[in-house]
Length: 428
Image 1 (cartoon, rainbow, N blue to C red):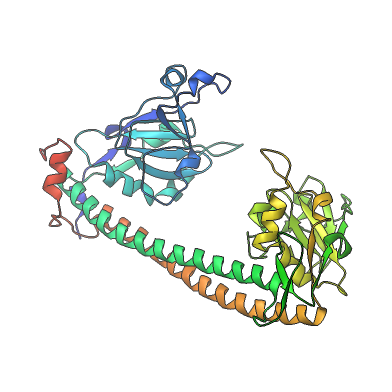
Image 2 (tube, rainbow, N blue to C red):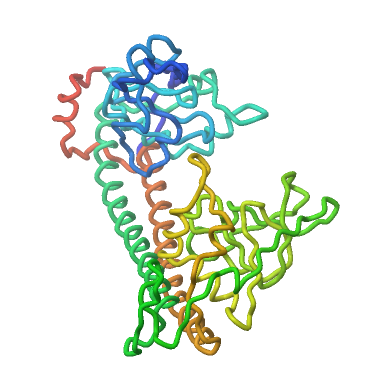
């Protein structure tokens, strides 16, 4: 451990140049085309990587010159300062930002990586500095007056080299686990899709259903339009009635889980009533796969279809799985209307043919799918716990390194070559 007393305390404004962002007028095409300059917004900073070199949108030099945006040199830090505060990246190409970000341009006598790591673990503190009523924003004044303990350049480089190596190892482990989660989710969804349209028996004799999205089905199954199996409920909640409320944001994509619910008193928009056993299907952007069977009485966003099944023909627990099957979602998604906010219509969905499965077999399918899904969910839960632990370890490792709790003065991996590459000397 190093005594931090030997590290001088300096404000960010003494170490880094802060540059603001801006947005060219959207109605002027020449400000955007040709897009020659990387133009970073908070949305571009949402990925887990530490470095970026491009952006979702780009601006032209004319747009740069006719806005408050500034050109920032490569190898600088970009920090989101509103919605949300604290997402941070090192940018490896020249860039500009919108007003939701600030850039910290490096001087020649520092290692920018050290300051990236330092700020990356101080998101909570940065948010505490945010001010505003409509949304929190980190001001230039607050940012430039943040004080940091500043080790010497050789120590900055040693710390950065150490953290580059260690965090890349941790990030690789996290990426592997996240990939495995995606594969497990894909496998689960593929099994559900196959089962609700083909059944579990691989030896059963099949026939052509005559419906393109379904394909072959067991020979004793039939097909039927959805409107003959379910009723689309459109009863609106009275304003004075307080009930549990479910919005699209409260349902997890692709697995029928209700993440949370709030009181309907907190919602001003129109909502629809639902009863226990109903199935909610998110008609806005159906490709997000937001559907679930509810086990309580409440109300929901009008962006849901509230479907009550005829349980003598289709069990609601099977209906929710059918509506989330890959092939059904793909078919419905092809019918949506509205470019920016695509929605599925009940008029179209009600006439979609779906498999009609004997009730006894539906019960077997539900039991087997629930058992299979629970196994997948338990594996995913364990992987997510492991990822959380790795992220905590990563953060604690960064904290210990940038605060001198780990003595890295003798960590020499590529230190001299990296300093030379930056065109700086150790000096005093």
